[in-house]
Length: 439
Image (tube, rainbow, N blue to C red; front, side, top):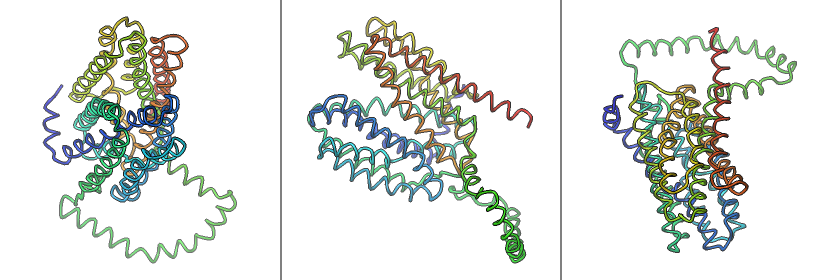
């Protein structure tokens, strides 16, 4: 292991600035869920079921919008792609606290749809700014900063909401997120290699490029003449085959979605499901046992273990398959069902906690490795949707088993589901290896 990689990486100013902006921008996002839930329950007088429905609507909006937002970054550039988010964050979250529940639902859906794509943009840019072992360290730092954010944001949101300032808190979330988006537009981190402004390394390469351009200009009339002759034949063939051009375009647009990428998305969904299910399981286990005041102890140790695991993984010389990491985290979550008090639960949470940040780091690294730069923003968007979808499924799945069987059943349910998704990922990886073997 080489922990000096962290020092070398943080010495790079663009990387340091990006990680800092990403961490600050995520704090409002992490507080929004708690603020929205408590606003609906405490201010609007609705139940937790209504609050859960609003959270689900917002999550669906985020999951639907993430690929589209990532695609916009790929096609029009970061600054233009962020303009709708910068405007909508302040407008929508300033209106949400002042409307009834019926109007709140469509507003939070649109808010999720146009949310600032901070997670995908940071991961996409880190994949450009860092390479080799540094890329693994960069994604590990990003995962660690996310863990720190979720130590700060939800707690701050709960304090603000319980003090009776949920409306003010939601408004501040929108304004702070918009300001973060403006700052991100100002530093304009690269989302593909061409954005870094790299020039040919030598005069020979520059001359070679100039010569190629001259040759293309000289050949242009002949190319146009040949194209004019072939156009009727191409049109006739297209009519004969029933407009295959559209089908080929769709296939080409999703050519990046290979079995290997699908396996990573399965890992992302499984990680989100296990993490959100474990979250609900911890709260239920302690609340049913009358120890709700000690929930913070378990969450603190769980998140601290994740930070430690991320630091170790980022210093490693070789990557570990995200499927294997998720398999370990899922299997180690199941024994948490046998905890009989707060400290037993806290200790049992350490082992799966150690693998939380490494799973997310390894999955992000794998997407950056498998997808070309020109489609990486869209791929990171779909990766975020898979993670968000897993989070949306994990809490209800755990809650169903907690209500029907008991507090510990939630850990077993999400742990087993995570193992099943790992098996799906392993099958997809095996298919990819078989396909690549002849080549």
